Image 1 (cartoon, rainbow, N blue to C red):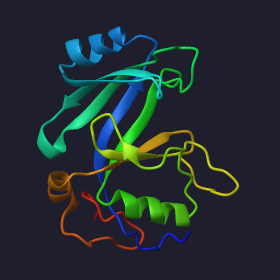
Image 2: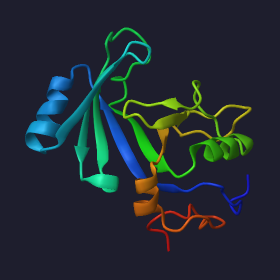
Image 3: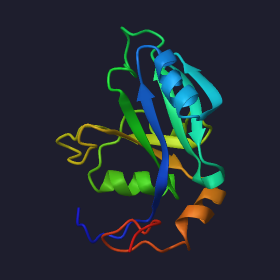
Image 4: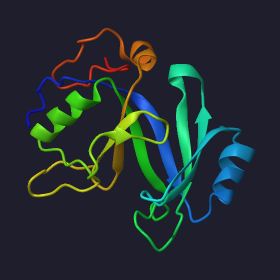
Length: 174
């Protein structure tokens, strides 16, 4: 992959951070009771071994989720509590094109492909580890790519087609 390749997508900003623990009671005590985040939803998935409270800071397209997660079964995988900072979610303006481009350029994606996430947006994950076939991974960090809805693209993305070589074309870039 060349660093001057033009990407057919833009990373717009942080969509979420996900924090895991053996029991979300302590996480709620800090993030909700002390820091004042609002609980805006709840998500339980047997296949993902997770019981999570979806909290938020900010409003509208600039809202960032803070997901507080505990495993349904601490002895089963995925172990959402084994790494306290479970993953970082990034808004993407065109998730299918991003996945296609990343795959063609050696990025290892986690199994499962594009699917609906806890908040209802299409998502997929960059695997935390690279492989022989896909030499680019998250270097120990699981990264969730989240399809941004139109209002987020408008608020954070600027004009369409503003991707530049060597940069994401997203907000905050000089």
